[in-house]
Image (cartoon, rainbow, N blue to C red):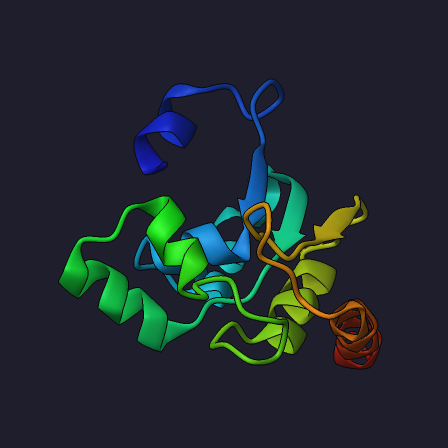
Length: 127
C-alpha cells in the first residue's frame, strides 16, 4: 500500500480504508487511519477476531476457510478499536461516508439481531 500511495497522485487515487483488511494484514487500524487520513476517501468498519486470525495463519487457511471459521466477527467482539478509529477520522476532518459491514459467505448467517447490535454499537461508539 505504501508503494501504491507513493507512486500515485493523491488527487486521483484515494483509499477505501477497511479496518478488517488493514488489521488482518498486520497493521493497527488506528495507526493506519492516522497515517493515511489524507488519502481515505471511503471506509469500511469491520471487526477482526485475533484468535481466528492466528489460527488462519497457523493452518494456512485461505479466505473462505477463514470466513467459515469466524474471522469477521460482530462489531465490538474483536480487536478493532472503533471509537478510536472514528475519533481519528473526525480529527482528520473526514467528511465522507463509510460502510458498516459484516462479511459472511453464502449459507453462513448471523441472526438478524446481530444487525441491530452492530448498529447500536456504532451509534454508541461515535459519541
